[in-house]
Length: 86
Image (cartoon, rainbow, N blue to C red; front, side, top):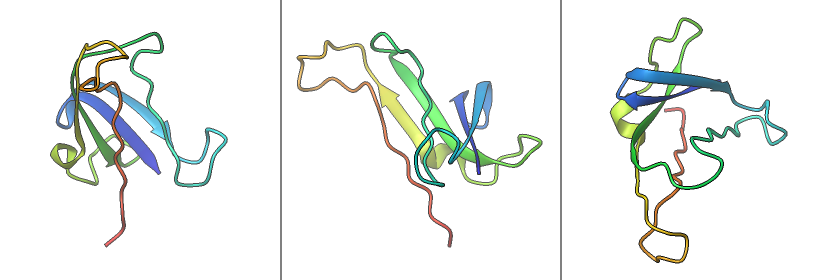
């Protein structure tokens, strides 16, 4: 499954990964935005076909992160989006 991450719903800077290719189970995927700390902003995650067309609602996979320090209980540096087939 091709999983897209963008800086806008269905657009902006878009990055793709294929689930199951990162050493975990077949449905697992991960997008690393910044490997050395916080990357505050709004991000959108959706399923895309091979041409990049959204197959799921990009707004449904919205994740908002902040730049608070790792010891701050209100810090948000990651998000989890699970997809299910209906």
